[in-house]
Length: 197
Image (cartoon, rainbow, N blue to C red; front, side, top):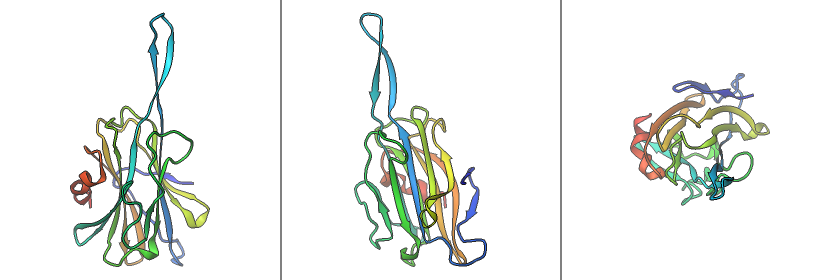
């Protein structure tokens, strides 16, 4: 069972017995298509489904610089350790609409942090998006949920630096960031991501 992470909270991704730590994690982003009730000309109402395009991205940071970005336009990191499963343009469907898979053992040694971001490519704020959440899952343990973040109602911003996974002497740590910002693409969030480290 995962925990709802609060801003600034850290969880250790190594196993309690200090045996082999986590090797594979996944960030899953889910949200729903917006359904709006519109009045018709003749006094009735009809439902209008409005597609909302959220994007999950991962910024790989080393030496105080963004070294690589995995997003809908580049689905795999240069070292092959981070993979985006593909772009969802609407939020239609159940469960996670977009996912980013990380093979921690394959992350290049110069990478100190992997920063996860979410942005509204279609421009809606998180006050306007229904049932939006991000979760971090241990994919080596049958998709055990490690942490969950609720995005809906988090504010009048179009982007969030959600969390970072950081390399430590003992393995990896996950820190919830929840830093709000404005931006429609991961590239526009680089300064915000670096400022959150």
